[in-house]
Image (cartoon, rainbow, N blue to C red):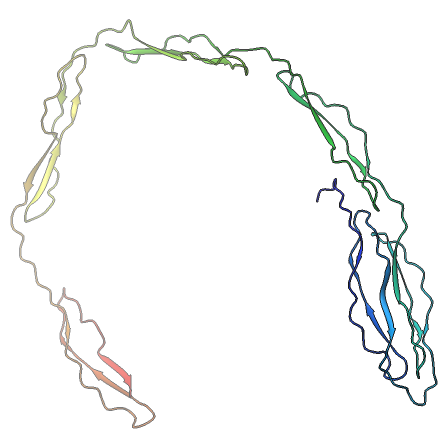
Length: 347
């Protein structure tokens, strides 16, 4: 939680517990009960005052025979403990002599607590620091100063102030206005071609950005123009290259294909003629003779299953089986028969 905000909370004692059974089966005895501190005091709240254990005489006991009457005696109180972190101290006492044969029971607490009488402690803060330097030299900025907590409050003392920092405006005068600036043009670049029509380019860069109130750059950063002194190019017509060799046939029989291609060997320039629109690839049939007849492969086959054999046992379970033989063997290129030659099952 925020240490600068004080939340004062008073100490609270919890509810009493149930009474215990009587300390004596005859004569005079007592019941006891206890309670705890349910809420410790916070930030100087009021401390708890009152006993944490209580006694009362038993009402249901009977007289004991052959025992002389004896009254209950409480021992002296111990010294008060030192004050703990919550400004609470404690003391206790014990039963020095329990009652007997109808003696008077003990009455009173066995443990007690009270608030330590400590003087209230107010919050202490330092003096304000000097104002810090403004974060801007013009155009409106901010400066700050602060103070800090030297000692937090205690035992109900005055809380700390909520304001530990202050900010105010500074240097609100306008800054000087500066517009965007561009540099000088570079020299014209080389021409894009060595003959005929070509282009050359030049450029420039932004060398100064505008201020918040200045004008931005709104001008060209690059230019292009036609080359002025390029000589005329020689005139040359387009030329096709030679055909490549025929490729291999795609099939060895029953008809296949083979192909060849060519590319433009020389592109036109200087206004020369374009290449004639004609084929750049040719395809012809090949190996059109019929393929020889192929050998027919024969796969292996099984005979039908035999009948199941008699069961191996007449009671308590047994095993029966059946078999089958290969009726046709596979040839050199055929597949062998697939499956088992013997099957078994319980009977």
